[in-house]
View 1: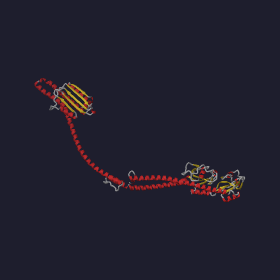
View 2: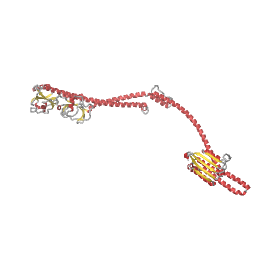
View 3: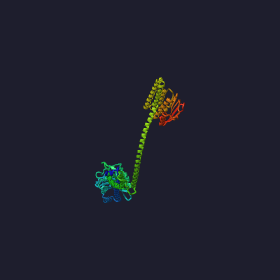
View 4: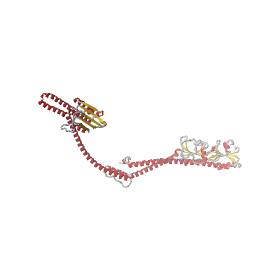
Length: 613
């Protein structure tokens, strides 16, 4: 029962609940995917932007520190070399060494190891430092560099008139650089997965882990870009310097592939030192593994997904409860209608209220009342129809019985006509011969033999006619060959029997008729020919069978005999009566025209369907 209640095919409430669950789940999944992707992108952007800002901060701190030392060296440019050397050594202990050369390049103070023969005139730091600030690496130096090495610099020394009187060179060590880099690394990732490096102008690692130090950075740029604008927030000079660095990479954070296959997010910022040439620029580089960049964002997206799914499930549950509560009235209406369908109750229970359920219940109740009223009326009508059908059935049975009786009567009449046309005529002829024989026996016994022979012929003729009538009743030449050929044969027999001149004509269309009415017309023709043979004393007979206007069949039989008065009644003679009865039987019009000594004409007209011709 519980499973049926949850089947949407059997319960509208279950269908609504499942629909709400499906919609809530779909919206929850769609919202979680969308919100998760947005939150993931925002978190990644914040992470990348923070890496870029930390890189710029470190580069800015380095630039300020180097600029302060350069300004300190410049501020002592008017002092004597010895005093200058002592002042710088005391003020900036992070300078690994300081060397001073006069205007001709002769070393006058400091570490002479930077010029092995005591002259720096041919060395790059002297020639370039004479014209302005130079930052680079003095490769010839053999001075131990125990502190973190950053680079070397040289600047000109000038007198009060502005003339160059010498060049001072200093080795920049950076005791605080490692601590500062470690601080930024910890700020980015407390687990220490972030890496901070300082690169020189050639892309060599100057400050960083021991395995990477003094080695070129060999990351390969990837096509994948983090979700951040190409140019991070920084000064124009720093951005341009990073973009124009020998590494050929943009200052914007980007992904690179390391030789070991790992992918890292790299951010670089140039150290801006006023007055330094481009070749002396340093780059600060911070990098993080790609997995770390997306780890926090993915975790946030998963949390958002679970929260959305839980909210969707809660929404679906509340919606299901609400739908069940709202559809209780509809469910009660369904149960009431089902009870009425099982004949457990007589009426549908109409709930109170004016909502759609109440209106639907009222409509169902009205339809049910109307159906019951119509059912009652149909039952009454059915009873009346059954009564009328019973009456009509009895009437049809009576008519059928009358029809059978009428058929029997017609058959009797037909047999009577056939007997009249054959046996009756033969018997009358034989009766006449018998009467004549009796008279001859009394008055002329010598003629008795001839009349007996004639009486025998009359008996044979009657017998042949009876056999012919029986054969016609058993067989039907009209149905087999058509009315025209059957009449043609009957006319030939009549000519052979009587020796009269007979003219016979027929229309081909009328000759094809061969139905029951054609049989009646054929028998009527035979009766007319017998009457001519026995009573007309004619010498000529004309017979015509034709069709007019493709719908009427007409038969005309005319003779030039003695004729008779059609108005006189002849008791005991049924020939004309039989002809009229047969014409009436097939719905034909019969006309007999005759006067004494003027012959007789018989016309028969029958309307037939065009397809019967």
